[in-house]
Length: 320
Image 1 (cartoon, rainbow, N blue to C red):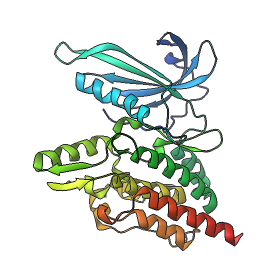
Image 2: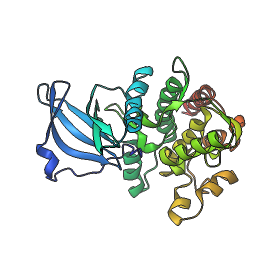
Image 3: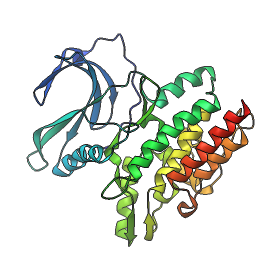
């Protein structure tokens, strides 16, 4: 099941069939107001609780097999393991039906989530991109620090550390106070994997192709070595791409993907194109490069990124 991210499809003011739809989820009734996002096997609607009148994002995932169901339910379990203001929380959920590939039946998992009216960081950057309105460096670092804190909570999950595996601007929502919230935990998995043999390597590579967005995917996930250790620093690469996008509106590999050139070759080359007319400090450029190291063993853990970000914020404040 392909992750759809949380970039909103703007259809405000449009009337379409799901506007009148009502859903009963664990005894609570929700009126569907509009479609927010769609994907291959899942979609997200804006729903209003009939009793409280509060708005929620309601994600529904269609499952065609027991494996699909287990993967979908993993998102619920993952949310329960994380306690952070910068990571999405599940409000409620219900699984309806029973998936059976033999008799061709499906089930649907409904997940009630907080609704963030500002949409995703990707939405915000897209709006700014139209006017070439770059965020001030101090604002970028404050939002980025919140993303790091959410990622730290994921990486420190108990009983075993977890990795998001699909961190990108479309999977970071913005709260009313513009705090970043990491969402879409369906791709999240045990962070530290021991790859022993071609079967393990191919399985992980296939999962990454299905679940990790190509322009944010870490180099070690493009061609997984037959004997290696994969850990949470796959997310640090993605985090570096997120910071780059916050500065320049897109991942460093978006232009390559749009041209139809090989993203894998570009990622593995280790070359990062910092625009010559960049308005940001050399410290910011170095922070991006600090995370975008092709060798995962040379890449920092998130606590080191947080420490360096704090230092950069203090340095900026000292210049004011």
